[in-house]
Image (tube, rainbow, N blue to C red; front, side, top):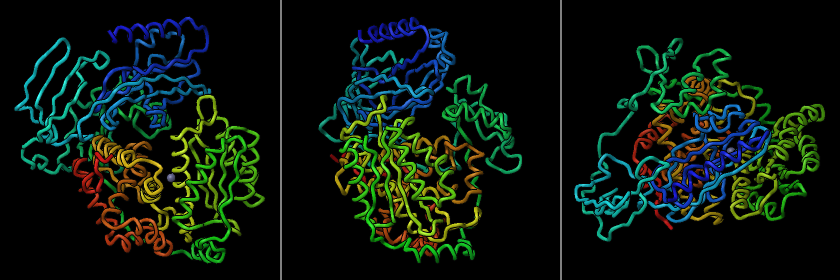
Length: 619
Ligand SMILES: [Zn+2]
């Protein structure tokens, strides 16, 4: 019954759209299905069309921004319904989503379509989730149905006494039209614990050596290995299409160096989601900190004299747009001041909170450029970062910002610019979830200010090692700090904080399945980063600095202490550089750490959580 209503509403939606003569903007979230029960890892999908073209699809979970959905999948049916909209036949969005990470109960997922002209439209579904005790069950012997009995009733199958992840459950599976398959719609844990053996999680450690491609990969006839060896394949065919790759990806996405080839990879970026790569052969580099140049030493002397790396007397200054609601301003200040309290007051620091009023933003842009640039560079600043500040006010939905270390000035200063989230009408909404984000963003960015203050040997050569902090350390430590502050200050529940770790571990697992052999060791220098980018594009670098970086610091915390990560490491890095300080403070060289972390990455998520000391089910 529910299904026929669903299909009917889809038809009405199509009909309504066709009658609207010119500007079409429609979005439809098809899965999760409203009112249904979802669990495990399932689909999150739908479609969106706009006359102006779709810029991106944002997914919100229970009102909080979660991620952007890859957009552009083949949808012949939508193309047929919207013949007047260009590219309507490539209007699908679809991804695998772990419903099991949500707490059992009612949740709402919203898909928001943004057009290239800045208009938005949303589609939501409220549904129920069911889950097993563990949010991710893995291992070859994780499921044992030897003692399970089944009964059937209509389109439902009941299975009782199933041993899953070592616990015993009764389950009901129901037919789901949208999924074209059966889904678990009820999970009841049995009282007696499973008495199966506990060594079920053992098994051969799967390394890159044992890597097997997924079934039915269509290898692309492009030789990656012409000037350098990227993968171990006699033809150099390192990348292939997964079975479900959309036809337009296979036709349009081009590997190769020409500017047209590069353009197809930008236009069809989402196609990377349907690709798999052979294990990456990393570039081996010598991780030896380069001797300091005289110019680096001169800069350092000047910065030390100016008190750059000393705790400042002058308190942080806030420049606040008058159109931001007071609750958001207070939450932002709270996050910033709490971070300063923990790390010390570095600066002089000016914090700019940009709202959505363009005139007010203009005066903040002027203030920013005057504070951070010498007079002869101010005009340039107004067209560069000044423009970014203006854009925050009128283009973006918000929740973005940047940090600036102006170390070149005679009297060096630091700044942080933050634009809180705004809704589709470009209005701020001071709900609790937004205030949590504002506190965390401010704490996170202050950590970058703190990192900046601990850097004195600026101006190193691009290819010299040790003085430009690697991406995963810079971002990973800032995320680690933001999560730690959230815990200390009670901004978020332990369950929410734990689910961030679980999500990151899952993202890393799926990353490693598609980009085997790639890890944080591959982005230490610009040479390595460029080589990796040539292999799998910018998208595959982002995960290394955020998810991998965050988890690397959680791992180090367990091995050493949060004090070493927050204080000792940065103090030592001022004079030793980021790599030698790592060695000294954490007691192992980067090379040793990378090998150790590699082993950690091969464990099951359950084992990883236990090493990180994260209880998946803490209240
Ligand atoms: Zn950051």
